[in-house]
Image 1 (tube, rainbow, N blue to C red):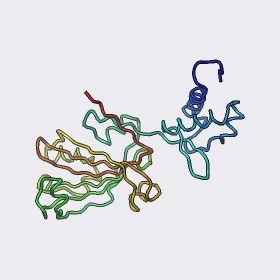
Image 2: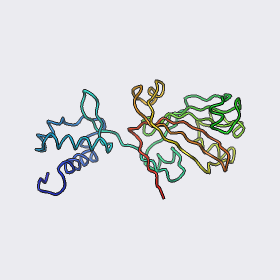
Image 3: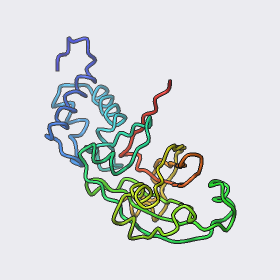
Image 4: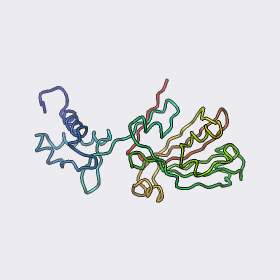
Amino acid sequence: MIKRSRVPLYLQLMEELIKKIDNREFQVNEKLPSERELCDLYDMSRITVRQTLQELEREGYIYKAHGKGTFVASQSYHQNLINLYSFTEEMKSLGKRPVTKVLSFREIEIEERIATKMNLEPLDEVFQVVRLRIADNVPLMYETSYLPKKNFPKLTEQDLKERPMYDVFNEDYQIVVTKATERFSATNVRKEEAKQLQMEENQPAMLVKRYAYYNHNLIEYTVSVARGDKFDYTVELT
């Protein structure tokens, strides 16, 4: 560390630790040296080291496990919301291997609450599809989609196991998503979501409600629970 530099010491230490994380001197989920050990190793005060660790945690480089210590976090997946996107294509563009696991596929009659959201009538038939989104063997999102049967009358579970959902829409029904609206809020994961996402029940997560349209017709309503430690989102305002 260059203690006479105008760069604050905690930022210098941050840069040093980030280099080690990027160079994989510290592996994902590896425990970092304790605050005391970092103080001795870099000849820093406890206050400086603590500030460094707080900033690294905020930036998503590390995470803390109560009573166990501080560990290197896995990469978060940055999602730009300026354009329409496909999970599968987005993960491929990041060099990841995407997998979508269909957990359930049911034909149901919707109740008034969901019917109102989808501009349908109560008891209209929809397909309810629950999927787990995975990248490089890491579960990222637990999704429940509602698809109007009138738009996709011959849709099957096998279709969604073999091809991305939007590919099925396009190839089998000549329907493409022309517009989508997403609403974000905080949530806590429920028991089944936690099990599939490999999280603890009631851990905080991001709730994303997606309304996808073909021209003016709503063709998909999806509720996603996204791991907050794996995603960050960017919205461009003009």
